[in-house]
Image (cartoon, rainbow, N blue to C red; front, side, top):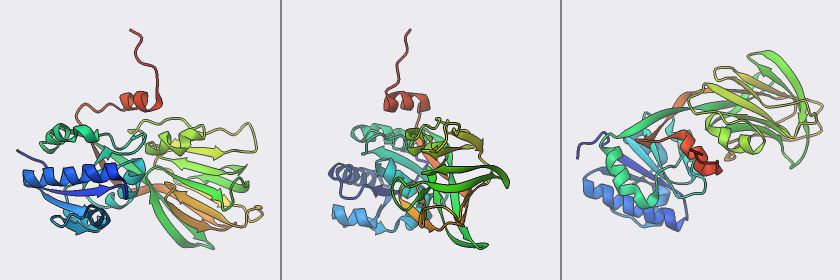
Amino acid sequence: MQTTFKSIGLIGKPRHPGANQTLAQLFYWLDKQGYEVLIEKNIARELGCTKAEAVEINEIGERCDLAIVVGGDGNMLGAARVLSRYDIAVLGVNRGNLGFLTDVDPDQFKPTLTKVLSGEFDTERRFLLRTEVHRHGEQKSHNVAVNEAVLHAGKVAHMIDFEVYIDGHFMYSQRADGMIVATPTGSTAYSLSAGGAILTPNLNANILVPMFPHTLSCRPIVVDGDSEITLKASCDTNATELAISCDSQVSLACLPGDEIRIRKADACLRLIHPKGYNYFEVLRSKLDWGSKLF
């Protein structure tokens, strides 16, 4: 078989029988085809697979041409924040619920992967958000997000006061439970649940969605993807503890008076799909939209 990839890394959903079954099948099938296969070490331990080389996820990024993530979108998000630093293609096998990012059917992976590995695939580059917390002019922490960065209070259902700036220009002050800043990738996630619009993945844009704002005139707004978004938490806010959540998986602590800067990250995720992938077909399927009338 002619192939675009020589070394393949496997990443999975921990403690999930279905995902582990698919990972084991994938390993032995790929190994039989003659590929060098690396398995993320925690998953290799669960599988009890001594034949494969078990490595950290960073090493998969450094050494592999392709990473296959078996699980749900949450697993893809966690892997993507690491793998985006490397020049590696990433493919998702869906063992989760919705599966916006993991689109390969686990029961049909052999014919699908045969075509992908021979070069029949489409490539998308999804940008990430870099989020920084600044205090008294000094950067205190940072991380990246594939879906969204969310400013919120440390306590549930607690209003906070903050200002929003776009490229240094004051946009408005806000009293709300928080603010969601989402990429096009994340526009079908938390942002959608909060009433935000869906952005197609090819757009260079971000959407800002206030969480339960204390005014009926406040609506989501789409801004240029190259803009820097700054959220300034008021020193007079009632919340004593604030946080920035990245993809609901990583939390950065912040305090009233801190400045949160959000902009496009330098690296991007190289996501691949089987040939014929159609984003609108995915939306119809996952969101139960109506089919063609004629």
